[in-house]
Picture 1 (cartoon, rainbow, N blue to C red):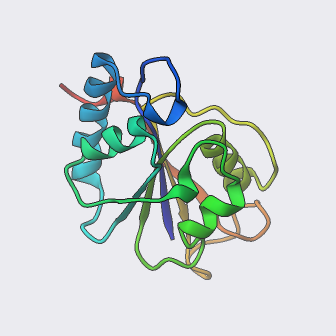
Picture 2 (picture 1 turned 90 degrees about the vertical axis):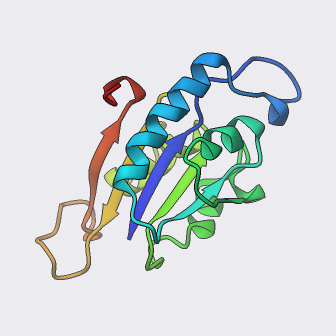
Length: 159
């Protein structure tokens, strides 16, 4: 399975938290990452977004169909989000548009096999893959054959 974690782009401060929208810089960040993702993602990729306005706006930049799930809201547990993504059993890649600290915690759990608070910066993408059994030797993370395919930032996307 392929799980792509996309943290929402830069958002304005304020309350209520779910209504915070992207800044002008955030819109540019989202557009740049969307350009890269559109070229890299297969058409079969399922896209799931948090109901927070900033996450919805980030997902909209990709200009593909996506589903808003309350399970991806800020403060949701790692287990709840992984279940919503159908990890590790989804046949199609899944792109999650969400929030810190949960996205970083998901990356830590899947890649290192431990509970840690890793930081994923705003608008960045972490692409995690679980190999099919028998594809390659054990990666050393508990037999799950999970590896990090890519980490991309808006600043690295060519203009």
